[in-house]
Amino acid sequence: MPTPSQKPTAAPATKIDIHSIHSFLIHPGKGAENPHEINGAAVPKSGKLFEMLRPVFDEAEEDCAHKIAFNSQNGQQKNDCRDALITYIKNCDLNHGRDIAKRLQAVTTHRSGLGLLFLMTGDKNGETKIVVSRFPADSGILAEEKGKGLSVEFLERIFMKSAKTYKAALYSGTSFTKDFWRGQAADKQINSAESVIADYWIREFLVSDFLTPGEAGTRRFAIAVRETMNRCAEPSVKQDIVAMQNFVAKMPSQVVSAKGLLDQFHVPEETQTQIKDHFPKAKSFEETFTFVPGEFAKLVNMRTIELDNGALLTAPTDRFDRVFTREPVGGAGNVFRFSTQGSVVDQRFRKVKP
Amino acid sequence: MTTLEEKFALRRERVLVPLAERIETHLKSVFSGFPRIDRISARAKCVGRFIGKAAKQEGGIPKYADPLNQIQDQVGARIVTFYASDVETVRMEIEKYFKYIESKKIVPESESEFGYEGRHFILFVPEDLIDDKLEREESVEFFELQIKTLFQHAWSEAEHDLGYKPSGELTSDQKRRLAFTAAQAWGADQIFDELHRQISGTVVIPGTSPN
Image (tube, rainbow over all chains, first blue to last red; front, side, top):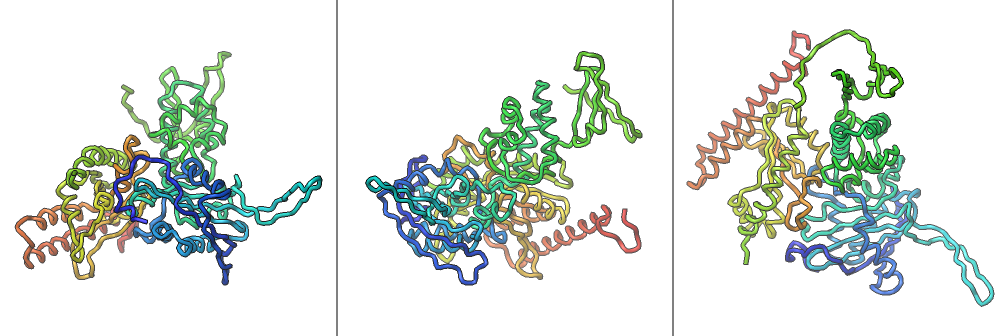
């Protein structure tokens, strides 16, 4: 197989055909002194298994929603998992595939259980693509009609593309220097509260993390929320944001997307659209990152209410409703008396808004 | 057939110059209000320097077989801080907001040498700064970020200017003089950092009480 860096510039993304598939049975082996021997096989490029796997390869761009990137090791441009994948791509044989399988076995716990690893590669017009996927083992019942009778049998090692535990990773590119650092991953368990489950595929096996670091993702979200609050004229949108902010401020660090976070707090569609409009790119609205509470608080730390009589009430966002007491005045429903008490520590002039 | 120089010049104009502007704006936004930062800048590598780097040899063979993909500082950014301890603070901030494939502190090879110093990163270009209209092959994945003190920056700029003159290699005496200025810059950084930490109260001076 030619080296991608020596190939001509790749054509625009086209459908890439599968070049080879290898499969390995992965027993749990994390911390094991004598890990189970890894058996593997080449999968023929025809037949029912191939037809079942083809969509996994072809649709990986859509299935693998998390944008990830390999971590640097000790500050160097080196990552053992990336190196193993590149070596496998260059050779495409069972021996080099087994090196990747060994890496997966070394991080697989009994809780993750038995799995079937598939390595699928393809190349077209100078672009190389690899999809790494893990199908978890499950049990089931095989029912077979025999004439007028029925035979039922319990099966133990059934490997399914389970919606909950199926995992995959996709890398593609034309240069082993420039490309194959960022990729995409499918991992429904990445936002699990249990770090063992959450860390298994992306952090431990792929030695990767999200492409957008937690602080950067949180910052982008917080700025969009703040800009929506400051620029939107709709009182209902502002009210939604205040309500949402109260929940978000108490939220622990967790893996989310902006959309997922807003859905979690039932923020109405209209408000979500306004917030999405303040993202640098619409597609970033659904990008996964690790929410960092302190970063969010830092960027929306002061809340101001402006009244029609010229008053500006400002206080730290998280304490605003405790600093100012609000009571309705009259029956109109939109007039309030705000009260607060404290010692005067400073006074300031401010330039009027242009 | 398009030459490497023509290919890079085209990429520079179409991709790198606008990308450098976006990177500079983004860095300035992330570090807005951050203390003791003298300047933040980003630039696209000029054509001459790219071609010079692409032609480098190692052991008699070209160092870069595929320069357009292998040279990672086609966009270079720089953050210049006041004091040496600020370089470390900025490094920690960078690691929070950017994903990197390389982070190294560059110091002279032995304790008795003085020369170039600084913190270098190879960072992923953040997704939000990538021009989605471009094909992946047209753009770059990474950019270089250097974090230096004012003295490190001043020394490396002058050294680069003097050291790369077409008149040829510097004499032994000229090299010693450059090393001397590097030692002075290093000493100035040490003293300024010490004074800064004493005055800001992060280091207690014997016989005084902290603020």
